[in-house]
Image 1 (cartoon, rainbow, N blue to C red):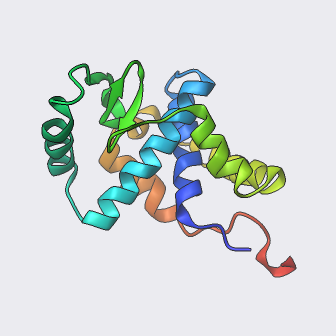
Image 2 (cartoon, helix red, strand yellow):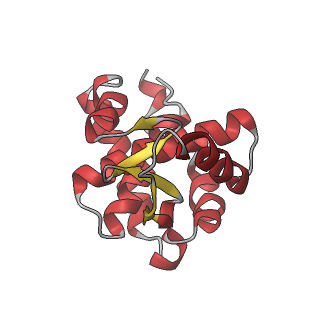
Length: 152
């Protein structure tokens, strides 16, 4: 079984948020929101700046209370204290659905163990820098196998 990149990104971002001091439920919401944000980047090939500008313009009129400070290290907006991407608020349930419901408990645990092992050794300076995190953590590990594929 091959695990695609989306749940890997969500788990890495969850453990990044945990290491930066966010509580677990909030870290799960951040993890899934970050994975969605990166999927949008890939699909639209927009720069982070263009994304933020478009997100602000598109949603500022509809959502007057977007907070760009709460999750500034992730460059995510917050609405009512929760991560907000592309018109949707993300919660810990969204993370659990993608990691554990979709892939099952055993594989979900393996995805999280993989992410936790990687994040343990990443300095905080890199965790706080979106570009360095992407280049130095995500890119080298995004195609790592999560489970022993020879037994499938």
